[in-house]
Structure formats: C-alpha cells, structure tokens
Length: 111
Image (cartoon, rainbow, N blue to C red; front, side, top):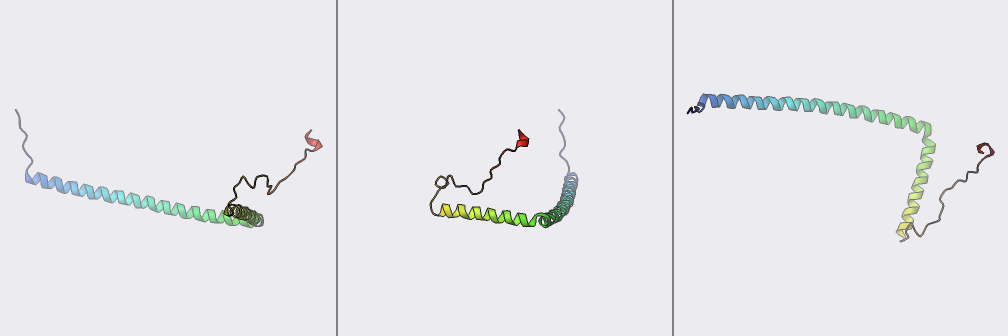
C-alpha cells in the first residue's frame, strides 16, 4: 500500500500565496470589466437621453398645440371622473353619458 506524503510547510505557504494572488487578480480583472461595462451603460444612457429629449423637442415643435389641447381634454376627463368618484357615484351611475362622439355617414362612393 502506497501512502501519500503530506505537503511540506513551504509548499503550503507557496500555494497560499499563489491562491491569494490569483484571487486578487481575478477580482481586479472582474472589477475592471464591470467598470468598463458600467461606463458603456452610462454613455448609452446619456446618448439615449439626449436623443429622447431631441425627439420630444422636435415633436412638440411640430404638434405642440394639438398635444396640449389633447392633454387638457384628458385632464378634464380625469377631473370629471374624480369628482364623480368623490361623491360616491360609480361608473354605473353615469352610464349613458357621451363625452365626445362622431357620426360618420356612408358616402355614395363606398357603395
């Protein structure tokens, strides 16, 4: 039967130093990769934010007045709904109320 010898003190110390250096090295490489990816994410977020701001600015220049009117109409609808709910009314009690409607008659061209 062959028995294995226990590693000596020098081998254990050397293994501990190598393992410690490898762990520190892996941590530094991982931290560096993480910081690089985080930097890319910050740059991408900044580019996206500027692009979104620019598109919103362009949209508001082209459709600003119509958008503000629509927003005001929606706020009026929400205020009306809140006023009804504050008085204890439910949606069932205001059934049949038409806020806005449009009638389209068929033309002779569609026949």
